[in-house]
Length: 488
Image (cartoon, rainbow, N blue to C red; front, side, top):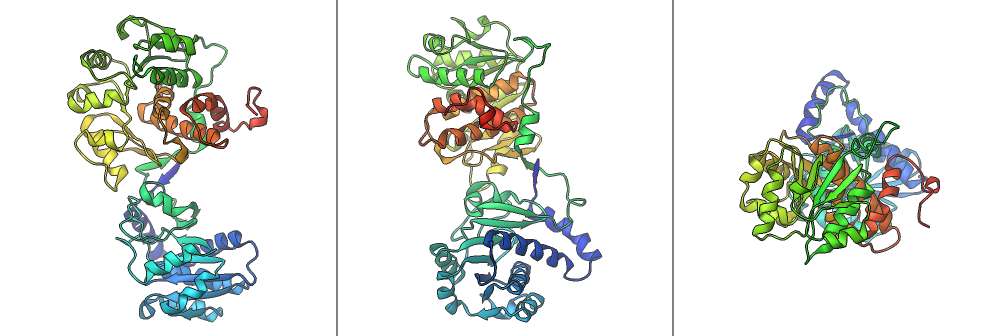
């Protein structure tokens, strides 16, 4: 897993290294890693035009020392000093000693128009609020030009802990971060400003605390996806119960059931009011006419998508939540639970709630700029796992553990894709995974399926269901050409 560490955690980990190492050694490590990534991005450094946007403090020092190394490799490097009297002294001396040239902010514009690479060393992980003039104008002009936009540690104007962007921020295509990945690079608006994140090891691994938030890799997700063995049967692989869809919204039941089936549990039992549509679409499911209690043995319930919010729907929801089984509640179930939150608070079995921002707000608090913090607060308050949907989905456990999803595509913002996510998560809950891990793996696989579907153009939710087997195999590291049923 990729650990996500706050600015305070990184600073605390740096302190003993700064005390033990010669002065400037830690900055030299960071700057060397930064220069190495920049050289790789440039391909051919000789003659390349590089512009540094340099603020006060250590972030600017990192940029200046890296710029010195690029200059020694033949790049033509200029540093725009936003605060000339406060530039890092040792960094500035190294930069000038390597032949780098410094200019005032007013002279920086024409250089940015022709740059091959722009390095953002304006502010570091301690920065707050948006960029001020003239830094904001220079960042905007750089973004309008042809250059690769590279941020040092965190894009200036992005909150390192939350990803909040309040005003102008540097729009990086790449971010080279030191010691640990900061949450603000992978969640909230910061994710869109960070571009591709490159982690440089500066020796903090042994002193960093256990991360409170993490990202799953494909290998992490694969290790948690159940694989049947010779002794398995349809009951031993997990039985999912689905209560979704209605006469008004039958598609929700079809999509949710199909996603659960395609994620490969042993059995799916459907007990909603869209029975005819589900039976026609998925003859593999066992469709029961009646209430959930009539469906037979299951290992978890998925309830809510498209089921309505009338008295009958609320009665069914209460029946499901009264069991001692894991329950995933989505869509209409969330609307009803927001009105009667004690239905969740009183549960001893695991509960997973999957709101988007508007559904989240019905529980009494807007998401706000700190998405991880908001998900954690709701999870702790309700005693339930919260899967907060978004460009970077956040999963929070009541104990404070959090996951930030790294997969997906903006094309997933279309009707029905949440129903698919619920079915995937239900299948994983039925397999026996802890609730937060099941939700995090479901988000990861759902995102991979979305990426596969979007590769062929605009997607529908049904495309995700069809792509799920390939997505699971991709997560496990099996290439498409090795899939016998892969679509052309």
